[in-house]
Image (tube, rainbow, N blue to C red; front, side, top):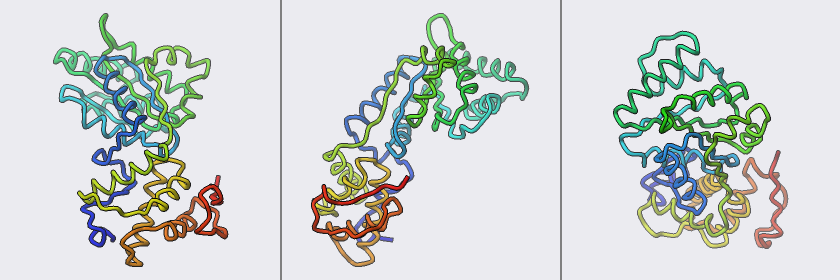
Length: 288
């Protein structure tokens, strides 16, 4: 609704992950570089964890756009699934013309596909998002896929994306063999204050193709205090602020308007807030 008013060609704070808006913070750039290296060098298992809304999926989308044409990928997002159903989903994602059957038969067909891809000098990557939802028994079956290898290299690279609970699950004694095979662990932390401000400016610049300022420095400070550097929360509150600014015909979002928007957010317990209070005095209380 506010695109024309603010001069945006597209939504700057859309919650749908979009690699065009990838912001190269130190942590997100490290995560992306780590994944690219691990895939290129055929390291096998890689784990990237982070809190809800930390940008894991955006890193993943950016990764997919940077892989070379000789890298075949499958992305699994439904992780409330059995081991056999997971194998079926993997074959479907790789567009393998397979014959349904037992798990051993499915694995054999996957192995045939991987060997053929290796023969054509292709690298095969399986990405499992929301991996913290996988049952330990299913995680153990995923480990068995790492047995599909030659004497020199892995036939398939497996990337787990998940919330911190994934690391806790992988610490279970029964998953020790899987844990030992993980070549890289990487945890995404929230953005710093400086990165939060630069992240917002980056997104509006991509959406508007201009260097125009849309938020005052005090408004940006409030966004950081509210979001604590979590990209998804930054997107939510900035989108709401621009919508409110459009409705009120405010060309520049100031701290007063931003405070109003924050205190109307579902993430905040609404109370009396002084717009002139210092950032340390602002009583933001996140609901459980």
